[in-house]
Image (cartoon, rainbow, N blue to C red; front, top):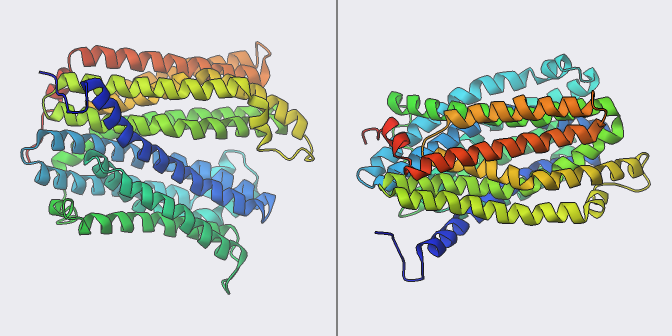
Length: 469
């Protein structure tokens, strides 16, 4: 029998539940982007070299955070199914958090070691040694926030499974303000503090990320309904079975994220072959596309929770409805965003440019054209990330990683290079390759979800049987 509530049909009830969970998660994603934007705005007033150095560093930091993101998403999927089962879920979720904390530590240690040598990495990638040296000052400070940020992500997955996305959102918004205030003080030396420049931005980021974890932990510890989980009890215990499950689920997710981040990073490097205006145009179009992407990313995170809760409770029809609802909402939102990019690309591009700056006219015209291409891949970009999120709710992560590898690189990047260089289309060809790659991944993810959801995800559920509570 389908579940109904007093407010109407199961579909309308699911739309309300999905939207209520997804919009705070989407805004939390935007708050994390806002922290980087705040750093850019402050450092842009310090010097162009400082801005360039932290932009390079930020790319490296996000790449190194991908394993932590992947493992936290895996923990979210486990939390959801465990809560859905109800029987023994309090103890099971506590043990999953312990394993999640250990997995975050395992991911953070090599990431921190690599970021500590980030200047050497940047030089090896062909970057200016002077900018790499400046980047080192930022990286040596921000690196201390990597592990706490991973713990925050794991706690956010727990809150998503509990269908309580509001507190992480409030904490994320407050962290943006904290990062801005600390950055203003430490970068420029206000209020009697020494002027630390890019190192000050790194310190502000590390402190803000640590504060996010501590604030969410404090909220959970004082909340009457949440503190009964005793998440932080016995954290030193190594949950080997759950850690193994997390790694099996999370490493393919991390690989998928690395593939996607790597695709756009590689495209950015390729755009350098077409000159500074092309790089600026690419950065503008990518910034706008990344902003709209935060919404389907939140829908994907919500889909993981809703699908996992339904599968854990033995309701495959509800799980299928949850996944299709999230995909449909993503299509609707991204269709509107795509239409905006297609209809008014010029005004959007000019928001990021000073008309008096050298090369602004050329960069603005190219950015407007790239935005039109970005409009074409909005639906595909939204569907692929939500499809991956729904599949995570079924604990299906390996096939999506293979789809990402084939679609992003085998289809997308290869086509981009062919259209950009041999075909002579330049930057337009590069972005056309992105459209083709993302559309292919979206189609494959939708096919995979349709195939599994028709069977209620029961195959995936059997393959990953519940762990003992």
